[in-house]
Image (cartoon, rainbow, N blue to C red; front, side, top):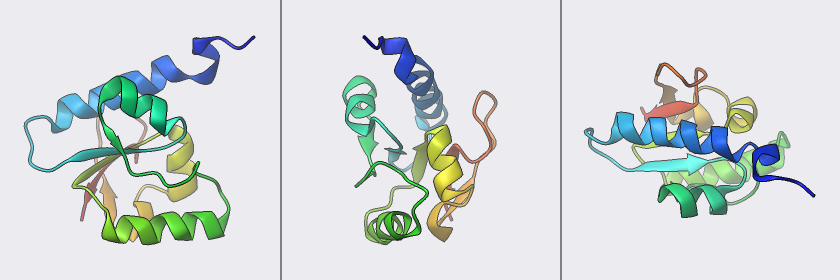
Length: 111
């Protein structure tokens, strides 16, 4: 009964594509951290950095951050929900990049 639009896919895809455009002529890989990561990766061809659905749970966030310490990319685009869960400096290893069309912290670069 749910439609494609009800899951926010069009907006997420648009945000990931905007990040792709920005990083396309810069060095380093772009990855995605957020919900629906399998679908987003399939549609945009941006690999996922997610192990789990991003939650506010400190335990899950800590596990994800441990993973990112060893499996980070130069660039990471977060869903709006993930920005809320991980902050604008995800796991202390990224810094926000201001990009019109994205909320602050949605695109981040490795420090």
